[in-house]
Length: 212
Image 1 (cartoon, one colour):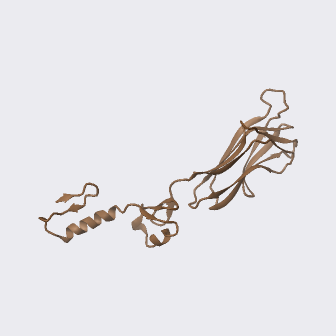
Image 2 (spheres, rainbow, N blue to C red; image 1 turned 60 degrees about the vertical axis):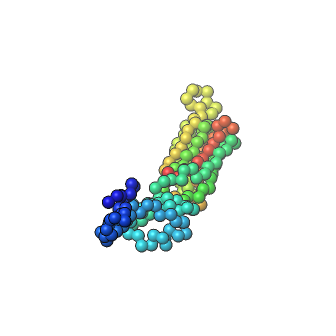
Image 3 (cartoon, rainbow, N blue to C red; image 1 turned 90 degrees about the vertical axis):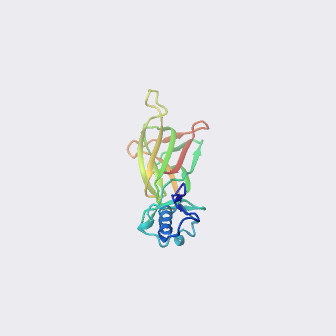
């Protein structure tokens, strides 16, 4: 009996006898190749309400949402969206505060799916009048990480002037929905001084958020 080129379905002709075994074999082949379920965000729960271990590995495409894979017990979103948003500033920033002060901030919408988010801050010139300061990344009011920075823009010693650096971390605790990230700076509580982040059109201070 002839078969179809892709799934190998039996293709009986008028000269072949009809048997339930042939029909059952075709049904099994179709069941083994269910393809992608096309649905919407609103209808996914209803369209997959009876899914269990037997549907493990099936893909679901939401025409107005995301691409998911069913593990047998839960949906996992397999691909990140990419850049969620960001901000840049060409203005100089300075503070003598020994508590973290926002340099730039950006509000993004974190998608559903529980994927990690990378935050990248770029500060081309960081210095403190007494040579030591801190910069940090926050999610809302929560500090995620803090880094020390050295350098004094007024220093005449090579290697002791301001430093340019990028600061990056992966945030695995972001919840879906609107989230504000902050890039902050502060002076040290011991050496004090004024902390300065210089910027210009060619070397802006920036903050970007990327879903991985």
